[in-house]
Length: 226
Image 1 (spheres, helix red, strand yellow):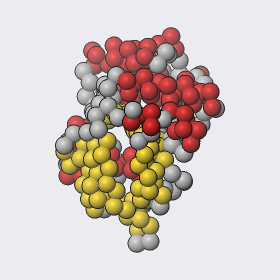
Image 2 (tube, one colour; image 1 turned 90 degrees about the horizontal axis):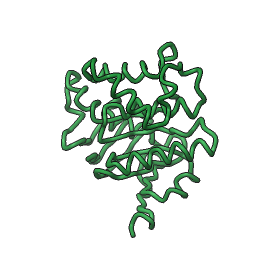
Image 3 (spheres, one colour; image 1 turned 180 degrees about the vertical axis):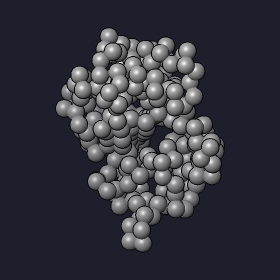
């Protein structure tokens, strides 16, 4: 599903964000990417989404070298990857239904299907009754659920989440991670970048640890290996 071969990312002469990354994420996996601040977690996710291009190496998504994709074809990649950000990135002057419809419009979803899909994913995250609310009328946990619904609206096979619980209290964080687990159970490959070791410990998933841009550990938890 997603493969990285000898991937390097260098922003300047003295800063190597990623060094010789070799990873494979298979279809249907749930993987945590962790490490201290500045370890390269966010850069790694940005590479998979083609927001950043490697300085060296190859990244394959669905067998395609995404670094070689022309800008005019990037929408084909973005249709297959949903992204959830820590700061939600919701449009404050649009209802949550319109936020999701707008995201579907960008990836080329037919107009007649946008509201139907938007309602379906809001129902999935338990917020269909607030579809006419605006983001600032929602709690932080609800806004994160909207962000997840938006990422899932196009039914992508891969979901990336960058510190999705960073602004939430522990109880809400557990609820969000349970939602990701449910999504993964339906076959979606889920990659979550987080520094929350408690969540990682309790969920027992494969964990890739980065430090100073390098993979220092890639652990398949015992509960997954059985």
